[in-house]
Length: 345
Image 1 (cartoon, rainbow, N blue to C red):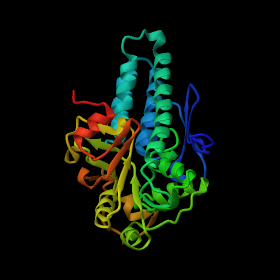
Image 2: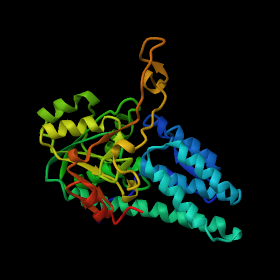
Image 3: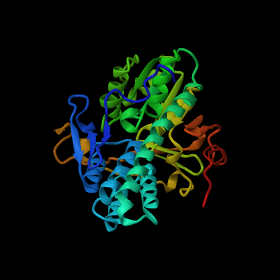
């Protein structure tokens, strides 16, 4: 990846030994403001409120949150871990980060506890950065020159500790001359596509045109789309993919139009303890996020709404899963285990 920037030009997470600074993504792209997290509870609130989001970044933040908990002594670790796990129940990277930090605390003298956890958290973060680079190279290899891409939600640098997953692939492929245009879906109701992905693509000078979620079928039919590329918050043992609500519909549309549907996610997103997508817990957030935009009502007073934050795409609709350990193709449980090196306990 010579001559290619491997991190985001805007620092969105920064560890300062006694505090964690995170870019408040709720305010983007209108305003750049950082939150200071001095306790594990601060990190939990930042994750739960979606001040920071994206499965890999949630994991990185949680790892640092556990370091902050360690500053209050060993008993605080278990409490912090339980609270962090509950902050966003769908993203398995969060659970993996907590487990990693608890393992790092085992058999460590009290006087070495903070050092041991900080070392583990920094390593966890660095592995995410390097994993993003590996996925960018692997994912770009699947695309032909001059590709036009649809993406959904935000799977860029803002969702990870480094370059990004799906958007990392897109940015690197554009650098190689393989991507000529990107159509990010706005991604209702939280607008991650319009507020975050489009902003990232513009920052990186990648040609992009925003589309509403319900334009995807028409764009696939009329704009010569070559691939749909998305991220994931959890991948089940059979390779079913959980991602931002609306992903399932895109996969169905892509299959109808004969367009490859690629998922880009680190191996930490794979959850072999969950046999298939039907067993993945789907977070349901406040209806207010559907009924209002930036605090302003868009529905009649007293209206009700549902807000499923994620959906599950059956593995049969996935052309390939790009991980930091290799490409899973075709997407099924056997290949997933083989490529990621993970196996059932």
